Image (cartoon, rainbow, N blue to C red; front, side, top):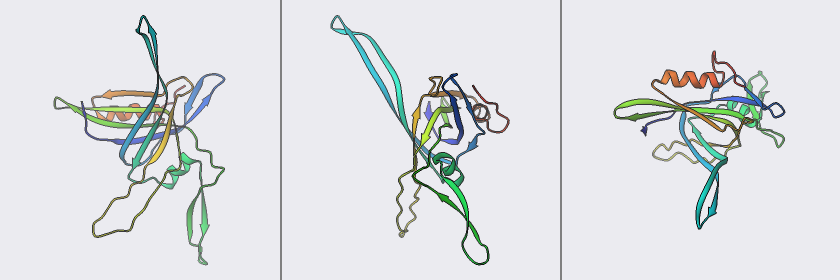
Amino acid sequence: MAQIGLRYPVYALLTEDEAYGTYTYGTGKVAAKAIKVEMSLNIADAPLYADDGIAERVREFIDGTLNFTPDDLSDEVKSDWLGSEIEEETIDDVGTKVSVLKSTTQDMPGYFGFGFIVPKVKDNVRKYRAILFAKVQFAEPNESAQSKGESISWQTPGIEGKIMRRVDEVWKEEITADTLAKAKAWLNKRLNIGAGSGAS
């Protein structure tokens, strides 16, 4: 199937109990509008040679890197993902207030479930692939800016996340649905968006 788009990037805070091997997701949210997601996986490849050939081969997921480019990330989402604080400040004598996103060296980014939907088409039939990365930790993004010239150049910085295994050894789940509504409903249930329920 040919992939023809990207939409509905969603996330929820992940809490794990290593002692009991259980996990829960908090209340899920929509992160932004999606422009691009790129993934790079680190896979261990261990062949066993016998009789001058490969007798067995083990390929095992280690971790991965996810680069997510949104149309824009709100301060609320940055605060969630990066562990930064949002504080209100008064900037003049008439009480005008602004919200300030404060990043410190003590910020501790949490772990999140992160999912999205990829529409696909094959034989003139549209399907919807919903993908959930079970445990992702985001990092402060690198950014650049440039002056506007004669033509408009959109500047949409991305954010990088590290893909890891959840406590139950799962690192990715996905479905292919016949409708967008069904794909959304699956992600909503997994990440507690709307009336969805938790997982453990």
